[in-house]
Length: 142
Image 1 (cartoon, rainbow, N blue to C red):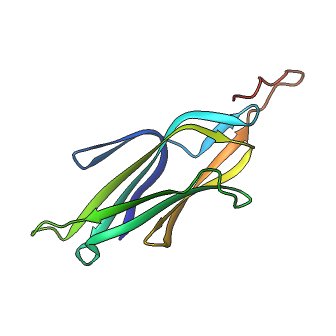
Image 2: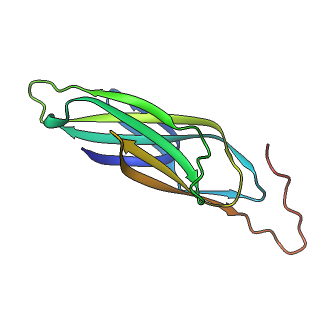
């Protein structure tokens, strides 16, 4: 199996096997924390070879820089099927996150494991917004 696309983005859709991404990013700027990101998506496109046909478990985990999970694990299963003429098959997965709360500035990681094996990680950075000298940062979002 090969991960062809793995991204954090503003939105993603799957339209008849086409993975559509809008606004891929790796940084969120926040004047104060905690911050609640209203909506984002994790998009994944995996290509399987014929020998990999069948059931596969998948797990997403989001951790902070201390290795602490900040969301419950997101678990699922893929059932990969091949047509008679297919040598490879791609599967698209989209995880929509609503009200995604990030407690502190720093580095986070979005990790994916397939069949119990770590297959990829994406960095996500929450960076402080520089404030002009003498200015008061806005209140934190809740």
